[in-house]
Length: 275
Image 1 (cartoon, one colour):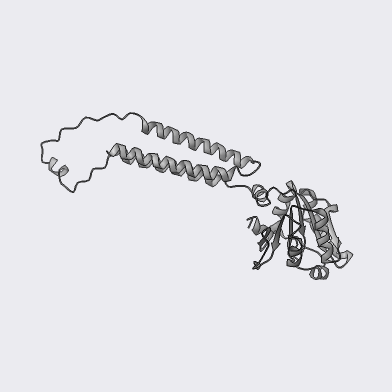
Image 2 (cartoon, helix red, strand yellow; image 1 turned 90 degrees about the vertical axis):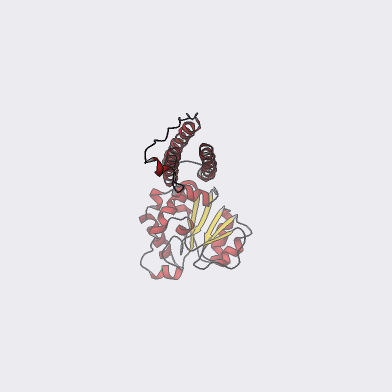
């Protein structure tokens, strides 16, 4: 009876382990490409599967029936015949230790199988190929064209730079902003260049667009017809909801009502989970 119970418990453990692997692997391979970390994770999975298979093989083999020992006739035998004595089969202890080792292998594997930032960006953007994004309040530290005009130079948010570069690797990205003068336009271009956006990323200066009104920025977006538009102005988000597939509204306050294709986040980097 003890052997059958151990087998049943092991079978249930394997079933749960298989279901757990199915869910994790479906999440892992939901991305279109795998980087070197993911390849290593797959190799780790193979090791875990082989280890589990060997464990099943060793436990499912024929069990040799041990001959019963004759109880000694000395006074020590009285101790083993007491009603409160508990006998723990050695096979159950070994099985528990092996199960623990299997669980440790699985835990270690999934700790190393976390997706990269590039994979997260592709997943979040639903494989969108064209993205338009406002500069002020999203890419730049400055929160308005007026603030940008009053400063001697513009500043690119260091926390968003890594996300921005990942987007440029696989998306056709256009940056745009309303400016009050030509000096503000030059400040923006200089800040982007100093941050390495034009050298490390796939962005060129011709894809940084400027206009003199909010309506002009909305017109840019409609003409480009992107898969995603990122903005801080709720009016523009509302106006474009009928024309753009997806939008990301950058705002510290989550709007009470929003279209089904409009998402919200306090910042671009928080949306992609890079902070």
